[in-house]
Image 1 (cartoon, rainbow, N blue to C red):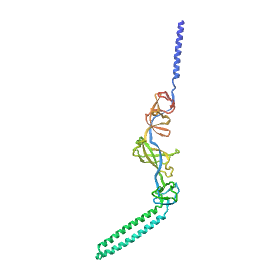
Image 2: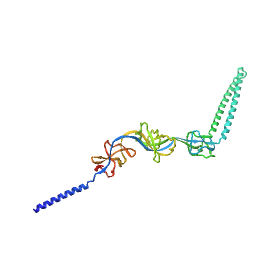
Image 3: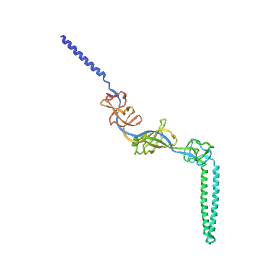
Image 4: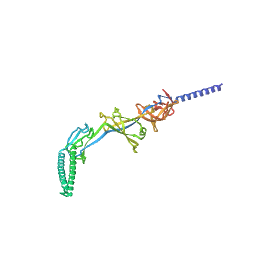
Length: 359
């Protein structure tokens, strides 16, 4: 009887130990992580590329003195918008007016000599027909007419040169644009063959150009696309209201950076964009089918970007290739399949194979 009681106690103790171990295992097993998921579905998203660009004038011209002289007047306000042909500077005119008067006097002299030579040649022509003079004298008279005519042409060209030099004393705007600061002061001696020749600069800001670079891979994806639109974002984060278009694409890849030079042209009627500004450029080249997931769902490790996918009640990491952002979402170009359930929260608590439960 004593042995039977002892056996019962041993059995009860073993049962109690087994139940306690099971309770410990249950307590040690981690609870399933509650998560929210979105189902991966493809939709049309814009094919876009982003880059940092810098604006520049569509035309930038150096205004230079073309004759030597004293700078007498500055006829514009620095920074003003001026039309094509507007007077900017005036150089002392008197020396060039004298030069023009001298050239016209020489032209009158040569014209008079030509007329006299022609009259002499006509007179001798009649004499040679009557054999009153030799043929040689007649030939010399004809040659004098030709020489006089050539001298008149030279004198006329010098008059034209003097007129040009006089016109160059008024320096006009070669294009419509925004004037730069005056680089020479009134009273300075300027010369076309010296550093003093540069008087100011003119920049056309409408339309304005934006120069930027994109990677070789982006250039390959963009190549052949039609109707590419270009948008820019200003330094304050505001989007510029006017859209532009590409007007230049480089034909070579920079070996040092692996990028291709690009340039876009945008309307700028109110001169909101100024040359030299840094802007964010976005190119849109049609659409493509891709997955879109919230930015919070995308993580990154040493191998690249990845998302967590819920499959069979467990979290599984999936490497993905991403594109650009669309608002608060991220475009996923590769790595997902239709119907995949992508986890979007509680990512820090996830481990490969961890039990998860959908909220």
